[in-house]
Length: 333
Image 1 (cartoon, rainbow, N blue to C red):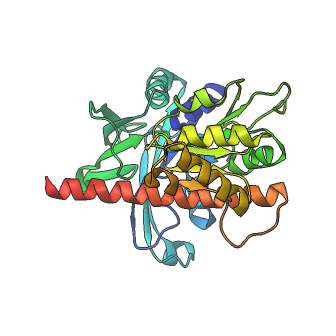
Image 2: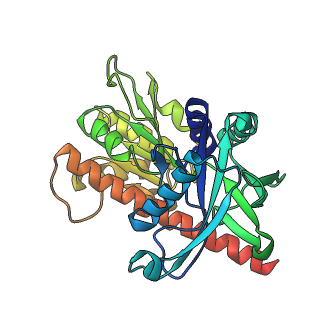
Image 3: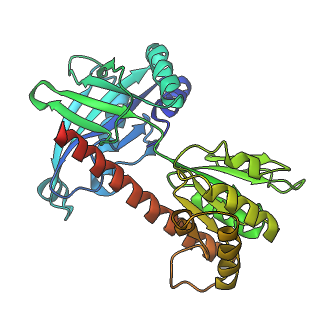
């Protein structure tokens, strides 16, 4: 869940109180990983998910019931998914349910600010005599490990991280396919900067994870892209597509550079990109056509679904590589 503290603060400010539900640990197969979170209101409204199904329904009832009943302390509980809930996952899930009220808004807003400025990590003790966990901020930047890791399970001491896990995407072009891609990425773990230079190119409303930017010289924005960003190019102009691809591929820290087009366009672009001085390593990051293989339908919504699937697969691969690298470095130390 992204923007945990911002969302929690908004709900507490509006409703007066809310519950933060966190998956503390899992054993065996479970719907979500440790660190998955959701926010629950007293009237059973919720944001985020801990996996759906009977587990999530029970968690919502527990959290909302405690809010309605005036509970003053957090609670820890665990479920055996098979025997307790009839879910065939077969694992076991431990949850923490924290209670936040308007008096806690200054603390919530501190965490919200830290989360928005790059994220933070903390040591967290879940003390069942308190309304919510006690968090001691860490001076170290957030790591690449899970959202929560047990430091001392018996003492209920954990290391948590709160970061924006959405991968940045630069999307150039606000035509039919660009609009479809924006909608396809709206519920997914991506933060989209949507760029076009034409007047009235963008719709009046865009998804929450999208920032629309009108730029007459869009290639200049490539230099400002954060490291690790994905670049999608689908403008109205083939020369502009080539210019943007050249600028993106010249940076070795942009792992995905995709241009909408055919195999013929790919061949022509590769020739011109090589002639411009890009090396073989850069050209290997060039993706055209875009989307997963095997889907030939050219309807904008279908292309968008295929592109979204490809970006998710690429994101997953890069995340796994980063986690494996961190584990190897820790083992070496």
